[in-house]
Image (cartoon, rainbow over all chains, first blue to last red; front, side, top):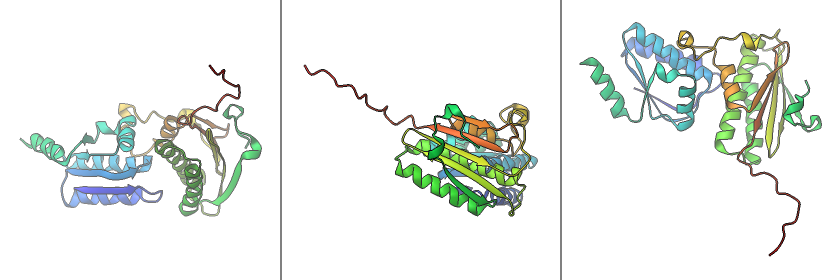
Length: 103
Length: 158
């Protein structure tokens, strides 16, 4: 699981995308992004989430987003990226959904 | 470089910054504008919208307009008032056609990592307008949470 806090900076998203891709490759194809402390996100940050989704798919995995703040949730809805990375209110709900897909 | 007429912004009220085309300089300009918004007591969601649109415009100017060339510059003009904020961002590039951009929310484009910036600018600002070349964008955000100015007429006392 990865926790994102604060705000994705102007120069940060490429680094974030690379780190998420490496995590998926090295650790698990299923990535949970805990966003409760993330207060700001730009299109580049959204792009990093999309890249992570694309990477996870190559390993038959998925990306889940947990507890985003309303403004961030609004961004994911507006861009329809919530169709790629499912949004859950709690970590438990995200884990349960993952477990359900494994059975 | 004048503000569009329907933005309701007096040319004389515009501040101007000319900054090197790099992310650190862009961030410093952004911070100055955000500080001014806070001074005018804009609500959090309005500040979020302006910050988002501004970062998208600056990133586009640096990466696409000026092609990450630090020797180039970005011009930023802005007016921040109690009722509205207008911001212009201009780069030294050849421009592009905003109307030719694919819809990033279409199913066929959802898995593309890029291409959402302009859409977010349009969604979060009250109005945006590009010049003909496409290397200059004006953005307007009405401060809708601000109560309308009181009428100067006297009310009758009962």
